[in-house]
Amino acid sequence: MILTIQGPAGSGKGTVAKILSERLGYKKYSAGDYRRLMAKKIGMTLEEFNKLGEKESFTDEEADEWMRQLGLQEDNFVMDGRLGFHFIPNSVKIYLDVNDDVSAERIFEDNKNNPERINQTRADNVEEQKRISMERDASDIIRYRKWYGIEDFTDRRHYDIVIDTSDLTIEQVIDKIIDYLKGKKLLS
Image (cartoon, rainbow, N blue to C red; front, side, top):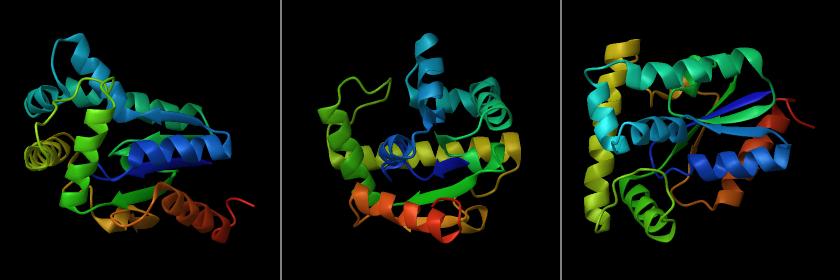
């Protein structure tokens, strides 16, 4: 079984993917981390890399092909990446939603408490983080529409299960996913 976890920044994708993969005994991959490393190799932040990607397709294509190949060649893993549903269509597609204020607060605190976070612009306050996140989302929408014809990656019809994480703990989110998998007889 392959699980893809999508959602906006700050929704808990990475943390949920990490804990869920550990609980299931699966590998965990992150398209965002892959792209952050690509950006770092050419001396850019993720945000600068995303802006470049509005004009140059290679910024997305390499990571997306990597994701597609994993979906074809491996099984039993969790993929954290906004377009996992598209590039690994045989996956269980999970969308984690979050309101903008909670998202900005989570990212700001995560960046403050995790200085090793790979190559990401750091905001001086929560409001600035909210602005950075909105710009990132706008860039993603432009790139996904231009390179893949995806009008709205947040469209709930793409996903098997949608969970609003705004008022939930990570454990509550994991429990909802596990319950869903058990209910669909994908997990005993």
